[in-house]
Length: 130
Image (cartoon, rainbow, N blue to C red; front, side, top):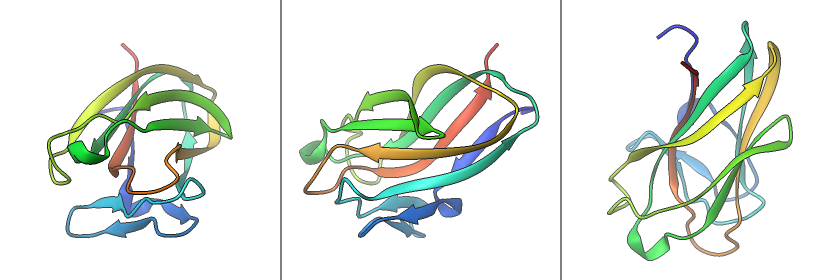
């Protein structure tokens, strides 16, 4: 798909403690600290309106946290982590559209949960809005 930017868990730079890549599920897991977050550097040839989506898993016992997506340090979307049925059941949630200029950007994802697992993050996607 032309213009699609897919930020995969395996390509994230991991900041903070505990958060790590889990190869068996192709996700970022063990997210147990507010200070931990993944970061991606992206380069956009074309700017404009982009649909923001996130693919994650969360066990019913840990649902309810708030997660924020930031671009260049500025919050662009937030969502409540919902139960997906289990830690191995992933779903994509569309978070709305954002406007980005062409060029280099830094995308980060931050949770508000201080103790216990936040979610398992598989990917963030930016698709041209139609």
